[in-house]
Length: 201
Image (tube, rainbow, N blue to C red; front, side, top):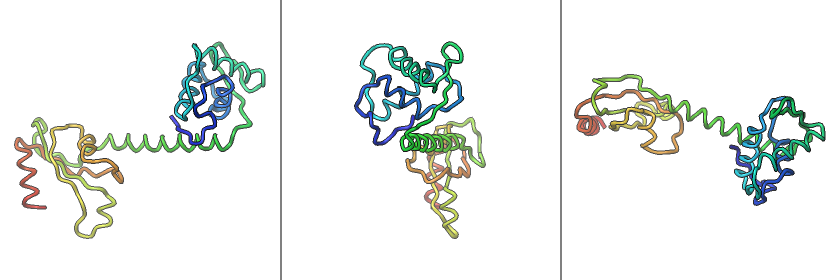
């Protein structure tokens, strides 16, 4: 959910008026929405931006439906079928709307990066994969580009078969998705890791 800075309703309980404002500035024109979906989007944005929950009961009926009724009277909402709405939105708060869009784009890019990271697989698998543990070797492409004959890399050992999780455990703030060059499955994988470090690094 997009977190908005300088939210003018920060610390204010959700009302139908605030919900109307959020609908205008966050939902898309001519796209069908279910009432429950509208509630989840609007309540989520309000709370994430620092707003307070509605003080009464039944947010959908007392807040969201009231806001939708006002928008319908203003010609900005159409109740296409029971529980389904479309909007003809205008008069947005451009600063607020643009900030929401930027936050959504940023979150989507972050999600795409995480999804790609979670698909990391080794270029080569050496040894018997039924064994308990393995030694892994990875590096970052950017480090390789900036190096000449040598560049930083990581040798380690693990029993974790989810390779992306192995790399996550090493640290945070990775500059890009790494290249997992190979893994070597071995019954004495910890000893093999020490041997490689001692003789080659």
